[in-house]
Image 1 (cartoon, rainbow, N blue to C red):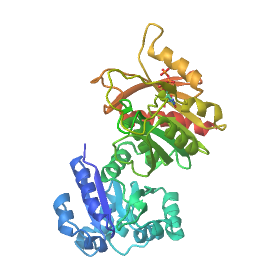
Image 2 (cartoon, protein in one colour; image 1 turned 90 degrees about the vertical axis):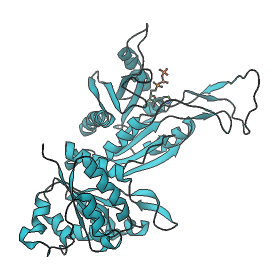
Image 3 (spheres, rainbow, N blue to C red; image 1 turned 90 degrees about the horizontal axis):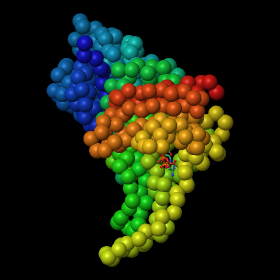
Image 4 (cartoon, helix red, strand yellow; image 1 turned 180 degrees about the horizontal axis):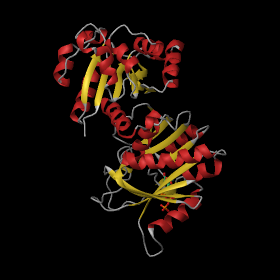
Length: 406
Ligand code: CTP
């Protein structure tokens, strides 16, 4: 198969240095990348860096190699154009069809998916002009990744940060593989995803936790954002990079997770509870580290069941998805237990997977997962062993079908 042809447009913002890592990620995962910087991008990272890492000639101008008509050819032959970072100025030019250099010409000639990863100061991102330009680009089918919230160039923090290069590369790979973002079926929908595992502290240093890595929940958040949804990710004790374009709220305990999920669920179109929530917490949390004793007894009290609570309080039309990591036993199979849980929790869909010991290919820390998604309507969908993103997409397919039936 021909290697995918990617154009990496780089405009003049400090995050241009992070685009170097994005370039590396794209070339190392088998893409041919042509870098098209703007003149001001070269003030941050010089042409030799882009040329050496891409293995291709680098130009900012339509006047270099005119006999090859680069201002048309580069855009026409691209399978994907990603502009990262996209400055406010570049977004404005792209929205209004200005074509004064090679990158803006390329944007006019490209007929493939075009992705923008804006990075700028919060004030510039929030400015009505920038927002109107972003709306215009999205209305024409461009994918504009929401900037992350965090540390900006100076000492300040806010929205406008460049997402992790690995996450932008993941968005690109996904669009090339699936093309789903070309018709973003979750656009206009707000979704909440919980991920990770809660911790219930006994004292300032010890906690009761679980094995959940958060990878499946992050895959759900990443894929929902790629399909156009506005995503809130409630993350409990994960060590994963924030998915591109996703708002992340960090929590520790089940009670904190409950507050964040219930607040986010107000007005959301779908809530997916992928987090492993502790069923109990210690009645007492000591404020000082407890000393060693011969025996040690802890009394636990039940935590609220967030999914069941959402099941009884949700507004009409909100799609609710639970996860159940089950093992079969004498009382019933994995799916028997799943059916009972689906009814008990009052959700629309329950993603049931069989958990195993360490080394088992599905669930927990692994990169892969397989599941059966049970529907309250009696349906049952088998998702074969594959990436956690693939399972996430299968879940969103089922959610999208229910949202469009509303
Ligand atoms: N869940 C929740 N709040 C809890 C416990 C679980 O919202 N306090 C959610 C999980 O996020 C998951 C689903 O409920 O989506 C199923 O979790 P599981 O632990 O399998 O359910 P339990 O009710 O704890 O059932 P069991 O008796 O099998 O442990």
